[in-house]
Amino acid sequence: MTQPSDLTPTPVSAIAAAHKVREVSSHSHALVKDLRRLAHEAGAYRKLGRIWLEGDHLARALLARGGRPQICVVGASAWLQPNWRELALAAPEVVVIADNLLPEISSLESPAPLGFLIAAPAARVPTQSGVNTLVLDRLQDPGNVGTLLRSAAALGVKQVLAMKGTAALWSPKVLRAGMGAHFALHLVEGVEVNELDTLDLPLLATSSHAEQSLHEVRLPQPCAWVLGHEGQGVAEAVMRRCALTVRIPQPGGEESLNVAAAAAICLYESARQALTG
Amino acid sequence: MTQPSDLTPTPVSAIAAAHKVREVSSHSHALVKDLRRLAHEAGAYRKLGRIWLEGDHLARALLARGGRPQICVVGASAWLQPNWRELALAAPEVVVIADNLLPEISSLESPAPLGFLIAAPAARVPTQSGVNTLVLDRLQDPGNVGTLLRSAAALGVKQVLAMKGTAALWSPKVLRAGMGAHFALHLVEGVEVNELDTLDLPLLATSSHAEQSLHEVRLPQPCAWVLGHEGQGVAEAVMRRCALTVRIPQPGGEESLNVAAAAAICLYESARQALTG
Image: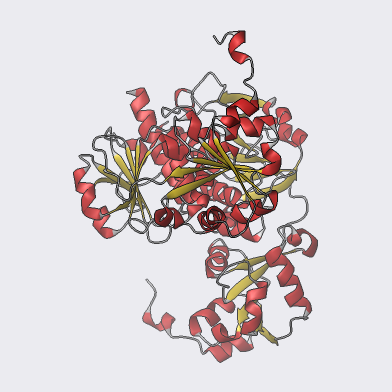
């Protein structure tokens, strides 16, 4: 229980003094140029080595998972408001930016007044073996990819592997759809097919041609579910490595499911079986 | 088995002669103006009484479900190609449009060379009672709504009710995400809260506060699953009418699910229980 004395607010001036705070108002400032690219180019974080988390939801989700921002970028008006200022001061360095620059460093229709810059992960993160995994085989739509990460984090997946050719996981659109799930997962990008062999996990995929229906099969635990390209499905070389393919029961007939809906169903069924033993 | 003689192609000139075919090349033509609105305004179909199905996927999905186009609009170049012409001639009236007009009547980055106009449903379609139903309570995102329709059609839902304030079901974006599911469902828009009482079905909703977990409950069959607004969830007046609320098990912790992912899970669990008896 926090004691009342702990709630005595530290004067904002005192906190700010402990931080590096600077003001930026020029369109041509190097940081503004970088933010513009990060907000508008899906893969810019790979070149610039930084990820732009726009908005308080992503910023708070990072902090809640123990993540560390490098820099907070906050609009000048928001900087004057205690709640935004408090969030901004979670970063060791604060850049107070002219409000008129916010739209150009935003990927949103209504630009957020605050965002965090964090360090991009190393170009090559090692995979983990033996943990519940989701493999994204060249998924293209950033909304689908973000939704998949969100479902994965909620339903007990620990690791997501994005095969080469998958949408950039840390792009603004995927981050937005992911709603903070990124910070709860071990994410590996640029995975090659033969690396799947080192996972020490059975790979599972859905196929409308599979004989067995998802709900009739005892699913291996842990496992790696593979979800494929929106149009082409799972690549042949990946499908060959799958220990099991199942079809999702479709009592409504031969409709197809959106890939993120299919993934939610598969991950739920794995979780359900794990819970019911 | 189709006999070879059935495959002898009817000369295209003969088919075309049986149809009303006209050419349009002016930006200011009344039909082009209507198509422009239908392609770009989500609710224009309600005012114009027509729905624009852009692209061969939706056109073929309509035909596969026995739907009838009023008019096919086809680009002049595509009209010269037998496969497009054959699809175009499924409509009793064909409008061959100058290729340079295609981008302005399209909601896609790459405009499709063909689309169908169909009659919009009556302003008020009666609800059906006693059939598996999905209730959309003010969902806003057209991609989510389309994905939900697609999951509903695949997983055995017969009817979708869109409460007042839900994204327009027949808008181009919802149609695109729905991938033809529209034609497999009984769709009712503009539903008021008190109409839910006439469904003769138990209403079910998810809630993170619910005591029972989805996978532990015997779900009523048939039922009406209610999915709520992306930010606000299910409205209080609707929630009060729910016979049962359940939480989706989230072994990964307190993440939230995208509404279309949550819906896929709920509809799958209903289908699974119906299949396993």
